[in-house]
Image 1 (tube, one colour):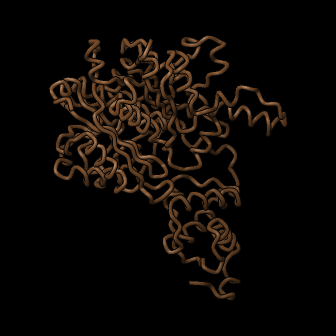
Image 2: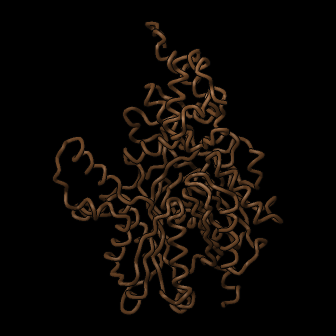
Image 3: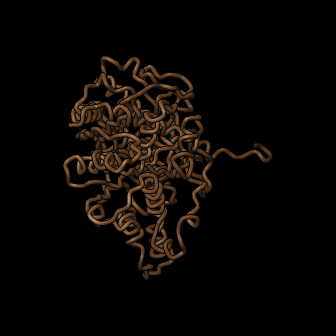
Length: 98
Length: 403
């Protein structure tokens, strides 16, 4: 379901960026993708999924583990997965922690 | 037969490990910087090029071609054939390799793109070309007959063996050296495999519920095929028989397999052999350990062997020698021929628990003595290209009526 411009204004910046990566990778119009879209709805198969993961990793400088790849089945999965990795990246490391 | 892989440098060494269910999948000799997502592979660590080739030979021979030549030497020595006179012209060479010599190609690119040095060493092309193994074999043994290389990814050497088999059966050749070789542990190639996300960070567990993907392997495997009557007439020791070959295409997806495509290839192979599915006693599966292959292969086997699948033994020897890519068909044809010859089915190791979606009689962790007569060996490649061999125990072939 396409978002209205009001909804888009309220959507966080990260989700917009992730949706942008998906749209560019798949070469589909931005407006066909919403935060609620599943990969199945967008006709994204497992090989497309790997390409999207590759571009997300490049865009955000994160490392998405294999089980993250396999469990990514929707736009929301992608957004929340990247958000979590960015938060882990920014988390200060306690000196002496393993 | 001749074989070099993670399990050893000869057929005998490899068979003793296959029987014992020993893994050749070990920590990588070079973990990569940054470390690869997968830290294990089936490298032929005991293979020493200097033991088999002069320094001059090695100038022009990449690792994958070295494997092909050494395996061919073992096979030819065992066969007792000498390629003289008419036989030199009537012997074919058909090898399989999916990418040929990658180490030289990568060294060339480092020189060009990193060092900005546009002068290339002159031998990159002869080292890299996928037919380097076939050409070396021709040179070493003085074989003047038809020779070529097939590249169909993971099905390369089954396709190669199948073509050589048909050439002999059709009377276009009296004998053939056929099989395949691959040397995948080059950095760029490993990074490319890493990107596909199907190499397990764990180990190779075909048909097991907790499988996470394939383990890469390297090696070379060669068979000497010979016209049956020709072999009989000279009193050759016959190790087994290739009796059928089948192929198909999925026409579905560039990487995802179907069940229908592999089923078609198995049916074609059985038809080519002139036998029904009930005559197959053992299946050496493609069994890569990926989430998808093991399910679609199970479905395909159940489609073709609907009457016998519940008790038809299946094993995936990739669990021990890894996925040797372009060499896989040949490595596994040898494993299957040895199983037939010795009446012993090697196991699928690293098996933790059954997957309901892979409901086959998987011989897991410990091999099984079994009086098997006829078997199939499957390879199903990226791009949906499927190739299946039907193999028979020599004693069974002696009893079988010659067509």
